[in-house]
Amino acid sequence: MAMPMESPISFTNVGRIRWWQRGIFASQTGYVLLALAVLLVVMHFASPYFFTEGNMQNVAKNFSFIAIATLGVTFVIITGGIDLSVGSMMCFSAMVTSMVMTELSAPGSPAGSLFVHMAADGKTVLANVPGLILLVSLLAGLGVALLAGLVNGFCIAVLGLSPFVTTLGMLSIVRGLGYVVSNGRGSFPGGPDAGYFYALTSGDVLGVPVPFIYLIVLALAMAVVLHHSSFGRHVFALGGNEKAAELTGIPVVRVKIEVYVICALAAGLQGIIISGWLGSAPANMATSYELNVIAAAVIGGANLAGGIGGPLGAIVGCVLLEVIRNGLVLAQVSSYWQQTLVGVIIILAVLVDRIRSRMI
Amino acid sequence: MTNAQATPVLELTGIGKEFGAIRALHDVDMQVLPGEVVGLMGDNGAGKSTLVKIIAGNFRPSHGEIRFAGSAVHFNRPVDARGVGIEVVYQDLALADNLTAAANVFLGRELKRRIGPFALLDHKAMAARALELFGELRSETRPDDLVKQMSGGQRQAVAIARTRLSNAKLVMMDEPTAAISVRQVEQVLGLIHRLKEQGVAVMLISHRMPDVFAVCDRVIVMRRGEKRADKPIHQTSPEEVTALITGAKEAA
Image (cartoon, rainbow over all chains, first blue to last red; front, side, top):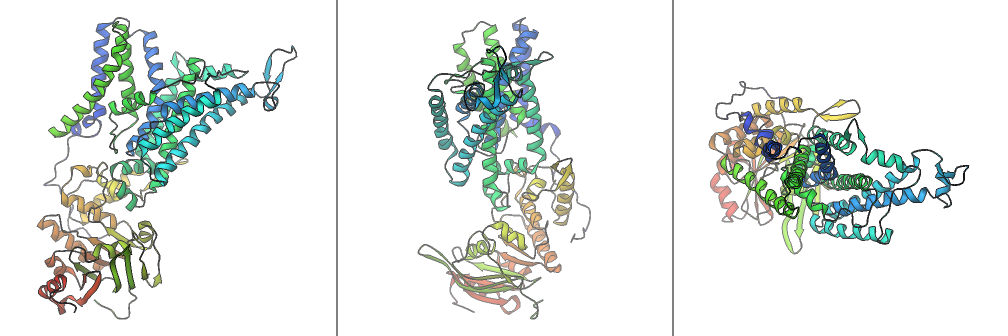
């Protein structure tokens, strides 16, 4: 039922916005990326060690350790929510993973007998199916994250509780559960599949740390989901105008639950990767990491008011934080200054964005 | 235009709505025929918005029955109303500022193309269709501009373009001419004429007497939650409608 056009539409009164005033060039992510580039050049001249292969690998590995969780929390922030439980979630998922792995690898236990048997020498434990224990324990670790994400999402989307309060509660609940199941002690990945576990979490492929590879793959997937799927479109719409999203028939409750589940899963995966690098999952692991994760997302341009954010920003935020930390170490500045500086950068990044949007 | 034999597209019988102790609507009967433009007028608090929200599925009526295209309907959510063919242009337009014009037009019913197992957004098709719709509305609006950067008239065009996506049988417009320029008012009124020509019923909720008298076939006046008048436009006058709205004249 197309209506006839009287004449082709002309744009006499509406100018086109210049390319450099649109997209990434007009975003906080854009100039934080610029600031990062400047910082890298400065670092190169400040320290001869900065651009060495070993240091670069270190930087890549270190920022990957919070970047995957930052991708997850960025989803939540775009919808205008917040998830404070990511740090605790990292710890709990890692702990459950390594505890399940250890449990299933004990030959005497009822569960263990399904998965492992004793070798002929009576000392070595062999897996019945190589890799199965690893798979089950990873699923267990991600499974608890999924549950916590569902509870967060249910409380926020269905019961209408505030995201801040709900996830603050979940921060405490999950951390507490971690202490309960481990009795306050840490747990260690063990058994016949521990080798695979370490290879998958802290190994490297052709000199590239595997966490970095996961990060790139997940970030690309996130970019496609956010900008080329209707789910991503709905995530942005929810952050832009929740009432409009509701009126236009977007399944608001479902989208909200989904973003909290994605966030919890990303945190769980992140925790499992960190525990592989640490070699254990201590009960106080990743304490207050939620602040680093949220800070990285905000520095990278995610707007806590909702509606703006993306994977590039999340990564840029994480890299910037890590380069500053690394730079301060190389410059032999007391590491106590690091936290102070991070705070200054958060405020600066948001301030510059405010000034820029007033100028246009 | 009024055709006695035609099935009314919308038929309300004895609609009432209470919010706690407040009676917002009482015993409202009305009919809207296909291709008819009905003006709904009334002062603030007269019950216009409540009535619109009931028809649009935001509220459920406390009493009465809604029939749409001949069959009784019960809407739980706005999507249900849209499903049968009722489109609404909300007064606050229900736009997401952070998205482009095309994204807003297609919000909640994005066009997709399949790539392997994935259904990805078809940006090109949506932009092309949106541009076509803006052309029909004579609005200089680029589909890939952010709504945040747009004028009031452009925002209005985006909101109206939305209703043109589906084969709506009834389009309700809540104060579509309140916040836009004189030229754009002409455009919106022109669009209402075009909808009418295609047999789409339009319900125009407006404070602006000239607009109502320019496009409507019939005017319904609400006062204190009740329908006070329902007259063909040529049998009434702006003076009479004003009197009905203010209560100087009780009913007509």
